[in-house]
Image (tube, rainbow, N blue to C red; front, side, top):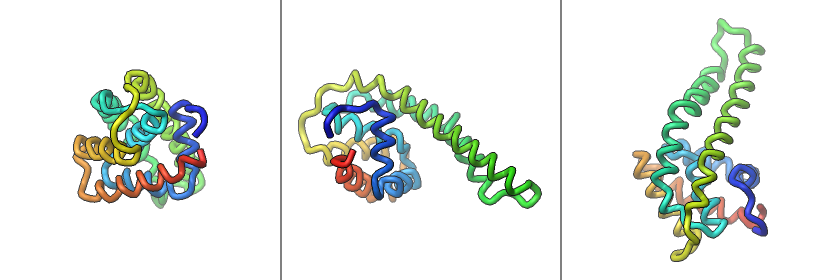
Length: 167
């Protein structure tokens, strides 16, 4: 990786890499916030230790996720498939609009997290993958993530860090 992009451009570039979307969905299914996971990876990939700000990252993310992102996701999911009593094309258009709003909510969450990176000290210690795995494990524990979390974290870390060279 050459220059350190902002959090949102970094996330979009990483997410576009082969296998990353699926790894993110696995994390989400295990109960982790993908934006928290991406923040951890972004901080580590840009030479920072996210440990000192993880409490703030988790608090901001939990509030935003529960009050904004999750309700949008649930509404979108309710439209797939559309109820029989609703025009299918209109429901598909609404689902698309909700997805656009959900993505904007994700961007706003990342914008709220990005300033916390300035409070992260330079990273030292274990390798990038080990550090990411450790911080993601702490995030999973704090979120009360299910038993799938450990394998989902390992898969996510492996996929993402193997794809960073392409970003």
